Length: 482
Ligand SMILES: Cc1cc2nc3c(=O)[nH]c(=O)nc-3n(C[C@H](O)[C@H](O)[C@H](O)COP(=O)(O)OP(=O)(O)OC[C@H]3O[C@@H](n4cnc5c(N)ncnc54)[C@H](O)[C@@H]3O)c2cc1C
Image 1 (tube, protein in one colour):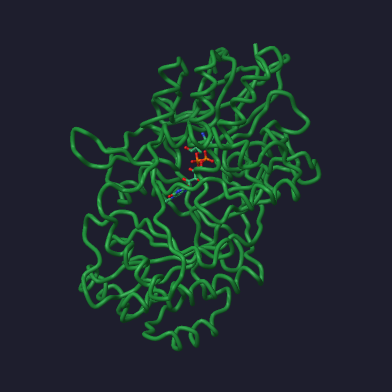
Image 2 (cartoon, helix red, strand yellow):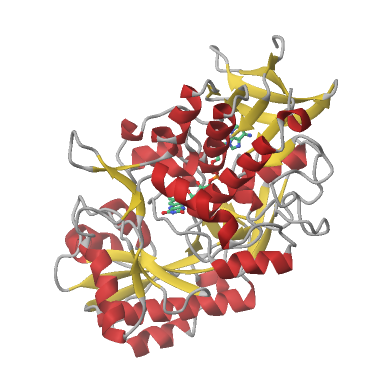
């Protein structure tokens, strides 16, 4: 191991939380090093939602799961830009009821909609948050058709996409397109393929022990030394790193996520093609408890969705242009992330609870009702075994037989493992992301959001991360760094 590399702030992780933090701190004059476990790949290095993307940008090839009943598979990105490189780009501001709830439940301070207004506006400008310039996919419009036939509230969700003048195509404004280049222009150094394994106190500064593969494939250890560390590895990894480093007894005690259950629908006419993008409509009639939306429905995704249906693979092969998958999402449940000495990956557990299970089944019923109203001729719920139903009464009857072990749930929204707030019995960090009990360690990613939001989380976490970084900057370098 060579000598430690010095800087003012080490940012661990380059997802939406880390990239936002690094850009703002570097622009304010801090000497910043971003350590990222994954590789630096451009947005164009593979097709969106392809097998190649799963292979190169997902942690463990996407095979990660929270233990519980039902077991909940989850997805984390591992690449420069984190989840923003692989996600759908659907943007929501922080819901007001959630912010007010945090003030009561976790004693958050100065975190109401008015406190986030300017930060949301900046993020929306930087990421070009807007409605799609092209018509939404047919499968998305069908959700809207079903909702309007039933008199339910449905919205088109804006996305972080910008029209590329050279190609005329909308391009995702991920972190590798926006905040990472901004951080680098301001002098930040980016170290990809490098994993922070421990944070420790040494001679009045913070040391980050990190490993990266050497030329012979073996892990080589590096050390970084800084006055401050921003931990932004995402909800699972940030909690695991803090626990592994012995820095917080609260980190990992309170995993939150949005559990989703899906239904694939067959229609009489074509609703899908090879260029069908991300569905942008969401049914809000039952929000905040339950939200309904559309999933990516390319043939490989449909094949996976019907894995447990007898004859499902042939059906997809022959009929995929008439098929699409939709989800019901809830915000109930709680879990934990535990680090075990000597084992690389943490043990993740989650229970949706009795009420959560009821909401998931109720959400599937509402989703089925909406899809039948939109003209679906058959529905295939994400259960094991999977069956075909073609009426609401059949769906109700089938769902009444489904217990937790038969439900195939999943999630792509993880948060809450290092909740922020002034209540030290519940919170790992204070209302501005500073680790309770330690000077100079901050958490500034989805981990800090105290509870599930009920809406796609990246907009909220980026606005809060920008607010926390600006608070850090304005409270003065004398207090925090150098
Ligand atoms: C398929 C998919 C679709 C989604 N769609 C949407 C959507 O439409 N809208 C929305 O709002 N949200 C969406 N999300 C969720 C959104 O992407 C996440 O909420 C967001 O990326 C979380 O940001 P983060 O900064 O907390 O962590 P992450 O994005 O997870 O980034 C963390 C980064 O830190 C790195 N890292 C972790 N540990 C270490 C370590 N020890 N050392 C060095 N580096 C480390 C990781 O490699 C990763 O790159 C989606 C997620 C997925 C997976």
